Structure formats: structure tokens, C-alpha cells
Image 1 (cartoon, rainbow, N blue to C red):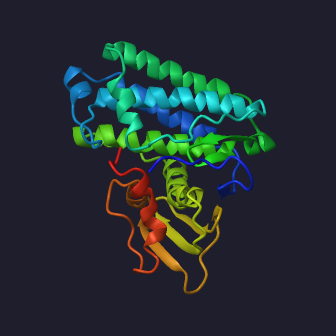
Image 2 (tube, one colour):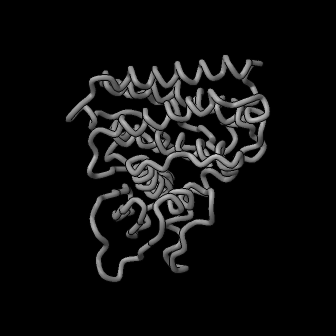
Amino acid sequence: MRLNPRYEGPLVLRLEPGGDTGAPLLRQRRRLAETLSTFDDDQWAAPTRCQGWSTKDVVSHLVTTNVFWAASMAAGRDGKPTRFLPGFDPAATPAQLVDASPPITTSELLDNFVSSNDAIARALAGLEGDGWEAVAEAPPGHLALSAVALHALWDSWVHERDICLPLGLRPDEVPDEVAGSLRYAAGLGPALLATTGSTRLGAFAVTATDPAVTFVVEIGPSVLVSDTPGSDGMATISGGAVALAEAFSCRRPPPSLSAADQWMVDSLGTAFADGT
């Protein structure tokens, strides 16, 4: 699936409440950088949960995405949101970019990761209040900056686990990082489906634990994720928040709904068919 971002009309994905999502985004990246600083050569070369990618490959991918996030966020704050992503293939292109990366030492790569994290921090510095509602670019199209930051958080949060879990390391599971990643991942698949022109309607509720997270995903030509309880009879997904975030992120089998409702939770797997 190639991306068809929505730049005109209603935002294809909204998360309410929005607000400041920069703190978990930056905390997670700095923690990952600190973890990587302890790695030896074998850990940098170790396989990850991303098929065919070593730790070094995943970090190279994160550096590339960080450059995009910093540019997108800065442009959005300036009122000139970018339009870089039409036709981008989220399954094939990241691997092509990693393969095309010039030879670099792990020390240099870690420095690049740290500096690219700092660029994101500069892009978000001083942002407050309504500033988080400014529009910037993410794979579904133009979204509020608060949602763009959640996409960036979710991507790096999942990849931290891709790196650490096969090495027997358990990353910190910080409640606001887990909740933000879960809420965003649950809405992302339906939003990408909507960008293809789908007009299917649906809704499902999520009730998660550790941390406690409750929200509803309302699906139509646009997708709304809101922190409200589900109504009687609504399709509902329950379980541990980390496990559900991984399931919505294609790291586990997708959450299970009825045959008629399963399409609402399967669409991200179509876009990211290789699981990276």
C-alpha cells in the first residue's frame, strides 16, 4: 500500500483530548539513546523483531524518520505544513533507505540519533496551548501537531521494543508512553483506510489495563479517537495496554472482533505488511 495522505478538507485522524504530547516523545527517545550507549558490537549486530534488520538497521531507520519529524514539526509551527509523503511505501521504502545508507560506525550512528532527537526537541521547544493544534504532516496526511508527535512516539516506542526484547532487555513501560502509543495505533489503521477513499462506518471501544486506558475509535471518512466509554452493544477490545499496543502495531495477532467488525483492526497490517 502506498500512502495517499489527506491534505485538504477535514483532518483524517483526530485524537481528543490533544494537548502537549512532547514530553513522552522526547523521554522515550532519550531513554533509547541511553540504552544504545551501553551496547557492545554484538548487541548492535543482533537481530531484532523487524525481519532482516539488526539493531544498527533499526536505529538507522529512526534517524531517517527523526529528520522527517523535525522538519514536519518545524514547518507546521511556521504555518507551512509539508507535503512529502504521497506515494511513500511504508513497507518497502524504509528498508530501501536503510540499505542505501552509507557505511558508518555505531558510535557515529548513535551520535546521529542523539542529534536528530535534539532536532525534534528544538522543533517543539516552547510549544504550548493552542500551538499543539497547528497542522503538520504525518503518514495519514495533515494532523494536529499533538497527533503528529504521537505518531513519532508510537513508531520509536515500538522499535525500542523491537531492539530490546530479543536481547532479553525489558524497556520501561511508562504509562503516558504506553497510553499515547495505544491510542494512536488504534486509530492509525482506520485513518489510513480512510485515505484510500473508504467510506465504511464503524466504531469500537478499547478498555485497557496497566495503565488504565479507555477510549472509542469512531470510523468514517475521518477517524476520531476520544477518551469516552463505549456504548452498550459496541464492539469492545479489552486487555493489557502494552499487549494491545503491540497487537495494533502488528507485533502480535490483531485484536479479535466479530467477523463483521474485524476490518476495523486489520487495516494497519495491510499498510505495514512486513511488520517493520
